[in-house]
Length: 120
Image (cartoon, rainbow, N blue to C red; front, side, top):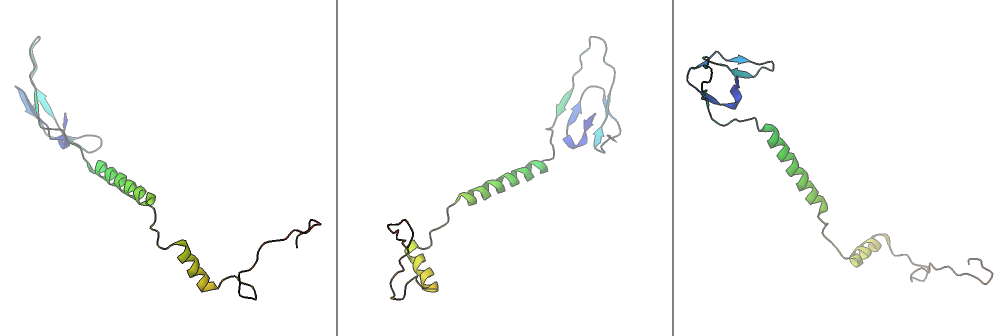
């Protein structure tokens, strides 16, 4: 019995090919019959061709692995620095206005601690 999908060819003296059949899973099988070999006789069987298997699963797995590696490389890439922090601060304050007091200067956000320990 040789699976048809493997594309193997058998040769031997007295080898006869029988009608192809299917196995339990529905795969085609080549069936061969060989004449009896006498006691202490020599059986010479030549197998030619390369066995092949479906490579679709291997191809899909390779594509998925390549996609994962590519996505990981994209994730590791640092974003480009588009503007300096001073430019960004200027853009933000220009839109919302700087924090300032009634005199136009920056607001004093420090707290003073009095002698008594309280916060002023």
